[in-house]
Length: 442
Image (cartoon, rainbow, N blue to C red; front, side, top):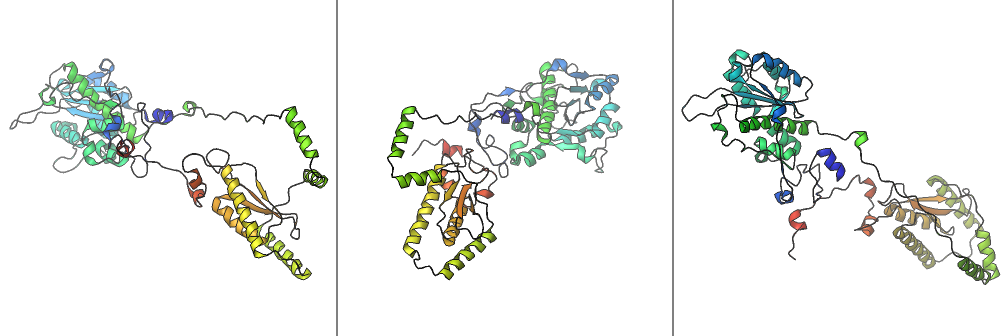
């Protein structure tokens, strides 16, 4: 969760919601507002004291130079409101922001025109905003001498279409939001930065503000700069989501070293030795002979195993086996082997399971199919094709299980362990409906 917060910049959540990014990447907060009810919103605001306020044509070029390396620039315009029937008043302020601390406001009535440096920036820089096309069209109409000619009567424009980013459309594409959920800058910004709020009531009704008069009231100045900054930050989040640098990656927890099993006490060792001596001599000899370490038999391919079985069966037929194993006994042996494999798989023993050498080729074939169904590795090993010491070795496949030991743990472990197609799974996406998860009714 810490990594998610660091990457997205979200506030810490008291509830974790896992969502499917391929079907519903919008997330839970927009659809289930009660999930965010417990979060404390932080109001987004620009530091007005560090903002650049341009009221003369001579200061425009220096102000625009701050955006030469900007990936995208948020743009917003304000103009005085008018009553019905009155002539619409021209754009009074143009606000620009890179979303990373550079905020500029141009007061056009004080400058007397649209500065050439600002016109050049509009023509050559990626601009983002909500209803930005309308702002640029009005700017072109109110200041025709600037030569922007953006979507006027003839439909022409000098601004490359690729440089105009409509945030409401981008939000629908990237976050997969319904169109009604991102029609305003406030909605888009708060979707892109959960836990932050864009205050649109700072200066009361916007149409009542005297935008053409300088200096602007502090609340109006804060309002205008906030809008441009919010546009830039939303564009950066949608177009260039932040990534953790290698030095910022959270440390990967390391498993403690496995400690060796404790040595039995001297009393238990003595009791074991006494019990061994009490066994019959034949049993002691068999145990002693079986304790001698031997090199593991070579692994056979399917072709080698088939050839070995055919050679063995041919030799038995030529010799005329006088005491064949009856079918009932063979079925009992096969079922016992299957039960042993199931018990070994359920216990989660990391050591390989070696079945006895007296299994027939038919038995081994049935057991191969059973192991494949359980997702286990299975191999027939033997010294050579004519050897009678061939055995079936069963082990866990590399990476099998979620606990490092090869076995599944937790809810549904017995079911997951028997899914034949689980090797094809890449990831498990979990979705929880809060209306069901928090329903207290029976």
